[in-house]
Image (tube, rainbow, N blue to C red):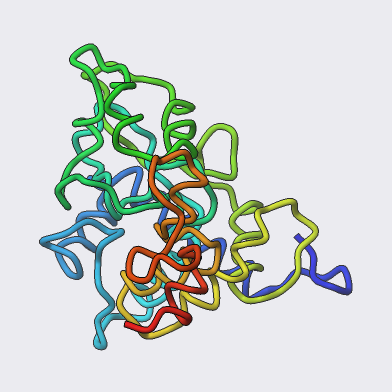
Length: 251
């Protein structure tokens, strides 16, 4: 938890401490602090979905600043899957997006529960018919849970799933663009740059996927075992790579 000269980055350390308070609110929404904040700032949503307010108190602004660390380092622990959406929500054990790679043929609000059997296990045939191999492997690595167990948020960078200031500090260092000696996934530094852009979240995800060559081009899908031609479906003269799809293909 030291900076380049052996000293703590105090700004990032303070942010990690604020993230700790955020985690307590998430874990104990019925606490006095949780109830007061919900009544004032997010009466119709969750703490993670609360939007910034220009007239918010300094305490609220500080919590939102700390929440940026939680946003990057947390994902859902799947229980019955009823609360977590397949699209958009962060539940795949893949730092730092924690999301599925490709668009899939499911309704936008489909929940993870739809990917499970009545006993709570994964519907393997459905997974293989819906997702690419990488995503199937990651989903199957998630232990199945009883239908009576609710979904809950976990901190990805601790074995017990609980937020710690130490690992939160490391995530904060990446968010601020400061090198760290941690083995934390280095892709967070790129996500940090996208995070600051004032653009819709869907565009941020698109840019992230493009930077990692995760767009569903014909060449990519064929590489992942989907039976189709690698050629550009428009001209059929060259493979439809990401570069070709975004810049080389004349529409």
